[in-house]
Length: 303
Image (cartoon, rainbow, N blue to C red):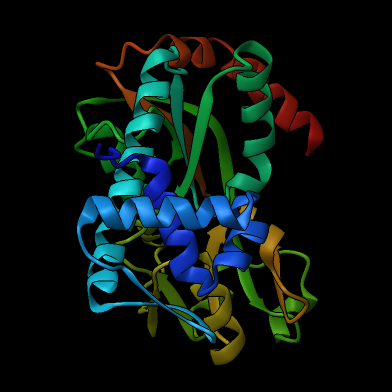
């Protein structure tokens, strides 16, 4: 009478093959008696019809047939486990999920209170968090990869709605030992002759705010370098001894060698908004948006 092959036979075979010893596999991996394991391996070999191991006084080793069988045994056992996991997931109600995005660097001020709202109201949801540039976040909202993001109001995105959460002043960032660092506030005319670091197209909203401000001030400044992100801006300020204009939240990330000062007179600001797709009917999104005023107030209180 043939013994049908079972998953346990594959599990036993793989353990013996990986340990190179029936005794070690039995005691350390399978927690069974060695004679019982030997019998299971013989039954498997009988079912397959070929010898899978060579036994000697030095131990046990795979035959050519055993090496071929091992690859497929691992695959079959993995697929069986995947089937079990899938069945168990299907038998349980899926947890609601919410994908939250942040403009890189803004997590420091906003993520704790955002997560508090979600956890207080809906403790059993799965929340995923990502950090990207503002255009990338807007694209994620449009494509449905994100439910809500803290970003800049990106133009030409008719599918998105925005709500302002704060208006950040623009500050001058420079080396700590720069001559302008001795001033409490800096006139925009004072940086006209400095090595200026401008924004690249990866930050179009900030680029637009800065260019509009310089135009209103009647100042023409040509950027020596264009920066893609906050860390690059700070690194270039330190390495080139240049100056740049950044949103005030950048002050949270400045090393000792870099400092910031406010602008004199008219201080330009840049909006930070929450954005979401108009067509998104997620009840979690609706709840979060209903608490946004509380979120703004709590963050403002902390700062």
